[in-house]
Image (cartoon, rainbow, N blue to C red):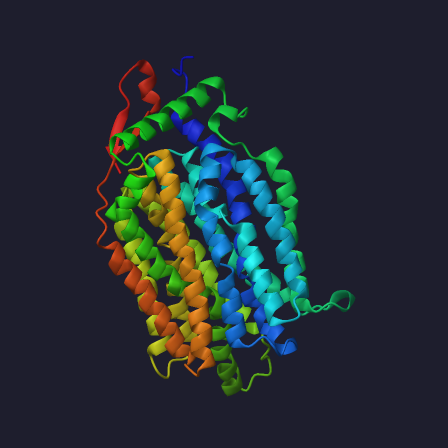
Length: 458
């Protein structure tokens, strides 16, 4: 069928508005259910005397234990070779149920088991989403699409911090507020698990909301990029895992996420500990554990800006590597400034933390474009899964390490410095990546006269 009448910009807009909002909502739900234990901790420790910092640190890390890690690569391959909507349906239903069950933990082993099962339930979601986006977006548009995904992280945490703050002051039906946090915030996953098979489209060939000509144009464009990637020589799993770039990306995100997950699970506690003396010094009588979540929201709202700027800038310039490094190193620098300058006011600390939040969510969109630039579809799927395994090993290391540091008496400032060094170290590792630009095939609307597709460097 002729594609002469197709306007590529119209197709891209249709795909963006159909695919990105749904993925954004799903990732908001996923990340909120993963991280809301950090919000609830501020109340849980008041009621559960067994929830020590060490128990909490290990429980936060158990999310990333063997079950989560082992299903990363199979999850990516299932999306590549089977069905995204069916796989995501399974994930959503199971993680929603486990997240709600977190409300009823009554001992350390139950807490650890619930976190492990939550990781097992969510396993394969993130690499599956990365692969799913490659089925819909050419490389030149992928940074903005990934920004739409990563945008869900700070948005979910900004929303979740404020929502959890409000929920935790209510003890409806005799159930504690922290329990309602898990019950209320876990329910949307179950709802969307039921809806996803009916509202998600697996591939362009199944998209009834595109015309026949638009489907053909999009599939032809994506196939041309897959063919180009295959010619680069990375056509098999063995070849992909033998490439130095895969290991550099894996080690880089391992270091960065060690700091990232340490901060993600412990930052509410750190801010709360810094806020209490500031309020006491001011003679204010507003000190409550959940006050910290208001200021935490400012941190995550700064992250929303960082994701938006990063996606736009990296796509406009076609540059990915140094965008990523700038975000990683910047995060480390601002976290160090927030924690290591003695005698600064709480307001100044929050300025540094907001700048840190901007950088902390600036680096992921360009980072996740890098492994998809020069590999065949199957090799990229496996490599993304492998890289994400390393990313999530960091979750087991980071949160657990901070829990043990606090258990043996290290200060919040020392724990934050540990996170800062991890972020900066990740940027140093990525600097060794040889990110050679690859040609990106674009068919502009002028091409329908029969001219050859235009090619620009990414």
